[in-house]
Length: 198
Image 1 (cartoon, helix red, strand yellow):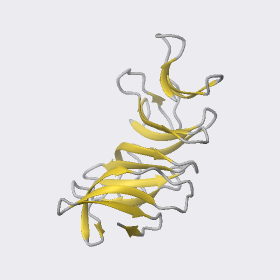
Image 2 (cartoon, one colour):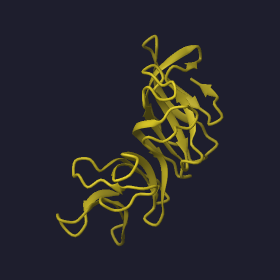
Image 3 (cartoon, one colour):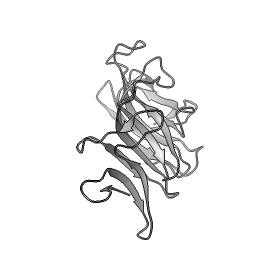
Image 4 (cartoon, one colour):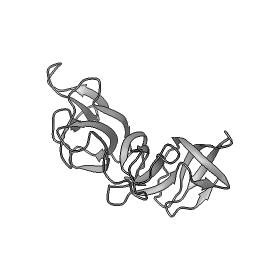
């Protein structure tokens, strides 16, 4: 998968999936995005964090214009594009809303995991609890795995740092690296049902 220009330099930029014989456009700048708006056309801020799985699906972040959200995370295969999370919408497991996204991972089962920040001042969110990890196959089944301010094994999470690769089996936990209030770091294993191990 690559970020490429269509029809030469004047064409839209897009995320293109190719097997060296055929090419499919996953997303193109200036084209409609699911749930409203269009993929941004500014060359410097279009797509980010794109990852590919063995089933030919891509998960990616995109900046948007012309709609109610300015960014989002999507999963597409060149035929169907599914919204996973959109800026300004309710963040599952919280009373807050998504503000920004990063560190996107994609499993072969279609699950997308990511780290996101929440909008301070909305739903009781402040700088002590505004970062979390979510996982799901669409915006309708997103689960919050962990959030700053949460106690994990007796320590307060101050920042999730990175996500490990997703396992092939959707029943397998999500592994991630976190920083805690005592300035220690730990590798944490989170089940979707909220259980932790480190």
